[in-house]
Image (cartoon, rainbow, N blue to C red; front, side, top):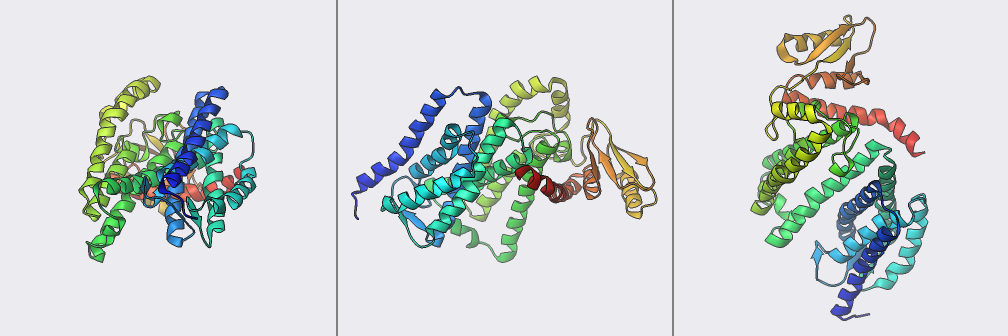
Length: 413
């Protein structure tokens, strides 16, 4: 059935306007606490980033397509995209916050089975669309709802931070560059057109290195700060360890550096200049936030910390105001080698304690938790230099994630 382009555009606008008005109504009708507002926003953020990423896969696999040519980013209409993120994010959360998100799997599938085939040519489906919808529901809609509920109750912090990291990565490194190229010119296919393979893989290595820096910063906020990197869900403790002992803004440095490298890969000056946007963001909003928030929450420690640790360019050696404790077995050859390396002038701010027959243990000052085994090795390496700290970050990302899997299965059961 052929529809006039104006009718298609009007139907697309309705898909945006109706969920938007419904969200306003729910916010007006329900007494909204700050934590609920943040939870609703996180639900939207997750849907906004992940649905776009999935759309690209679905379109390339031929599962569905969208009618009309207006307001599209890589073939995805912004009105349908944002309206869907509002509907399956904050609207669903605010209207049914006490309902288990798994219940929505069946409801969503029924709605899509009945509704999607009737929405042609606004949305045209083809073979494989049902599988696509199943994947959207299970891996985007349901996790987004769990993220909102966990945020409201302030539980399952590692999982919340992981989901928010996915949202940040898709928005920062997929949506924003795509929008820049839509406005200023360029294409994702440009990445592989300019450089020989060795140079291309150097670019990829550098991107992964800075991505590691950002992920490590998120992990440090969870493990030591008891919060997420997003100021709306603040840390409860000031984080000064790991990469934060070398520079104050590893996440912003990570994002800006990746934009710069992507711009160089694609010979796109506009994406390269996005790195400047990150710098302006830190110099403006982040500094303002720190002035009125960090100084209020950590008045003494924050001022001392920012005096000793730079914002962007890392120190070679860490700033460690209070010594950590490393417990080791003097009969263990690997323990002895590590202590010999640290005590020969390579380690900063770490005390050792001999306990025969013990596993290697590491304890941060002012914390009760002990890191053991390989995690303790990595924490000790954080006390050496910035390169070793990056290697330690990778170890901790792997080890602490693997160690946390049993807890994940128990928490989600």
